[in-house]
Image (cartoon, one colour):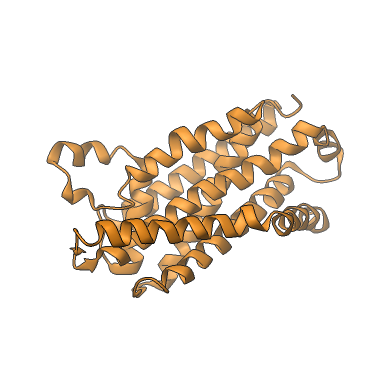
Length: 253
């Protein structure tokens, strides 16, 4: 493996974070703080507890997961789209690095940034509400798996998109609504039976449920099912990226 090539891509992408720190770090943290003020105070005054957990604490895993999904996709999609946009993708494809090493560099950097942001938001949340993590290992496992999986998904979107509008289409019109409807701010047990069954079709529900279990041992679906869904989506994304590099789909246009 060309470690130097992977590190060159990784360091370049991480350096971009420093140049756009307001957009990459500060903005999501401020948005999360506003979520706590609005949801934690306004709605929390009406809903005291869910499954024995105060509402302010209950929404923390959902907020982290919401940010993790959107930032992972955004970071990874832009990182591979920009070389296509400016034409440096040809230099990348002709460099002595394999397709696996290219994906490792870009996706690794995007996932690292998302994980860092998730941990920053977790630290920020501790200033607003009391937090206890029942299963720290599984919390980190769900955090890393979700960041890697959706960074791969963002990489796919970045290759598929042929303009900046398409780059934002999936995160804004698909991922964010699914995150809000996936139990980020409530338990699906609060919904009517019909809507509970419909919610089970939402893949984000399994991510939020598993992540919330690692905090409070409270879940909407079994932990094993949540983990299985993440691994399934991870495998699908890896398969699609393998197909993209095998066929050359939209790599040069």
